[in-house]
Length: 300
Image (cartoon, rainbow, N blue to C red; front, side, top):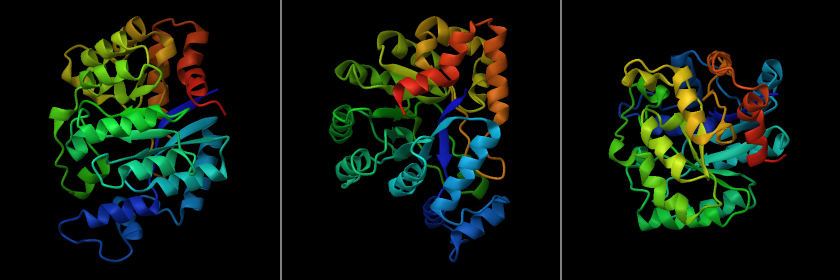
């Protein structure tokens, strides 16, 4: 069985938000169709249709459950609608700008009535320190919500669709260090904190954090091209080190899948599964990484 802890839900609102960010105003009407036509992607007709597309894709790829991420701030309701259609298959995450005036109310609504489970912070994207008092207040809210997890993107941050469309990405990596989460993880020892992509280039720092804080979980998602920053490093060796430090119970498999027609990114699964096999990892440990740890964090 496979569960995927990292899939992006590119809803109609996602594309509408991108269009508003275009300084050239290239998508003034019907931004969903315009942007998808430019990229040669399938355009989501509706949230419900996109949820159905994901369900069919998970069935085709034999993926049991997946975390769907609302991938722009303010899009919680899109993922919540998808989760409501298939609560036994989808777990809802949402991107939050914790500096926004309505951020506390959004967290209350999302983790309460909307039934979402993961709050996703991208400090480099909105250019803030996780130790800003406003951010710490949000984290306190998440920690007080039973069953919720905090997802914090660290390391290198690139958004492929923004790059393809030539949209500005004024990110600031000063705010990307996994070690910034150390005191937060110690303050909230029962709050699962997910760091995606093995720290996205900051592997050493992510492993230090995981070693010191047993509530830190590493998400294995994406192609992990950041290994190119480390001479001689391979994905197999990344897994070896992560297993040595965090063990198989604190790694969760993910693909970082996002758009159609590509759909679920099987190439990521193949590469990661081969890496685990090369390590001669016992089958129960492989199953924990690819499915069991997700189930433990998000019981159906």
